[in-house]
Length: 154
Image (cartoon, rainbow, N blue to C red; front, side, top):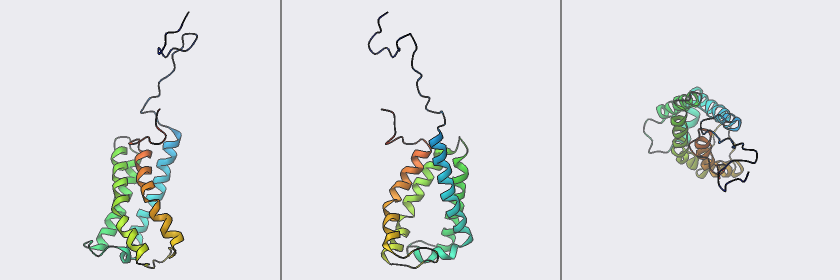
């Protein structure tokens, strides 16, 4: 029996299984666990030591201490959202937006050379941190199945 071109049927009459877009993958689960660990730890640190973050807050941010505390709660809410299927995509978008919103504080920290207890002061720390900020945006979107790039279906 001859196979029709483009029929997708393998020799022997077996059709290949199409990947299911909603099927959980091991790598995405590990990715979400990594995000949860990172942002969970940072969120707790924002709550436990809010005053340590105040020197890097841009001057235009109103109520800086309250904003630091709110960002800690925001991060923890997003972490919880990563583990609930109905809220996972929203958590991904929220964490991506968060990574963009904190970028001005990271820039101020680096450019002004502000010393923060427990963090290195050198550009060996600040350079990679600033360069990896877009990776954090991508990571949040990829771990929550919003984007597949660069590992998407071809």
